[in-house]
Length: 254
Image (cartoon, rainbow, N blue to C red; front, side, top):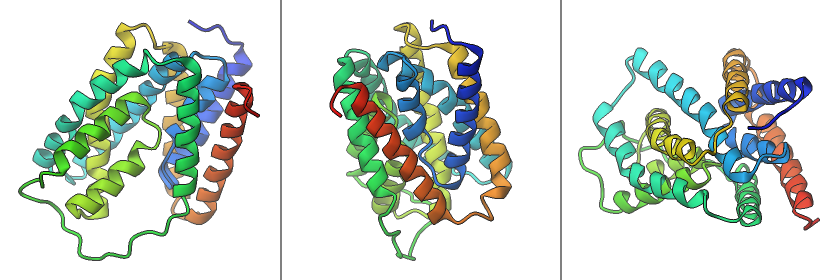
C-alpha cells in the first residue's frame, strides 16, 4: 500500500524496538507507534489499522506467557474482555469514518493526556484482591466505553484499563496486568478484522514494526529490572511531547 525505501523500513524496525522496550518498562507503546506511522505519511485510518498488528501479536504472546506460568483467572478475564467487544467494533468502524485532521487532533489530545498521567502519583492503597465473584453494575458500561476507546484509537488503553480495574474491582496490580493483556488481545481481533475489511492495513509495515516491538520487548525484559522507572517515564514523556509537536506542525497548528 505504501512504498518506502529500505532506510524507512530500518527506521520502522528500530522504532519498533524502542516502542517494545518502552512497553515493557513503562507502558504506552502505542502512544508512540500510532503517531509515528502518521508522521511517516500514512493516512490516519491505515496507521490506526496497521498499528493493531503489533498490538495483537504482543498481547497474544503476553497472554500465553501468563497462562504458561499458570497465572490466570480465565472466567473473569473472558467476561471482562467480551464486555469490551461490542464497543471495540463500534469504535473501530467509527474511526474509519472520521476526518483525517479531526483524528490527528484527537491523537494529540490523547498524547498530552498520557504524557501528563505519567507523573500522577501511584495509589498507595494496600487492600487489593486477586479475584471477584460478581462484577459491580458500574463495570458493565465502563468496560463497554473502554472497548469503544480501544477500537477507536487504542493509544493509552493500558493505562485506562489499569485505572478502572484497580478503582472499580480493587484487583491486585499483577492480576490487573494479566487481565489487561487478555482484554486487549480479545478486542483487537474483531477490531483488526474491521480495519482489514475496510482496506486500512498495511501488512508489510505492520509486520516489520511488530517484529521490532517484539524484539525490543524481549531484550529489554532483563534490562528493565535494572532501570529506574522514573527515568524511563521521562524518556517516554519527551518522546510523546516531541511527536505531539511534530503532529501539530504537520497539521499547520504550530
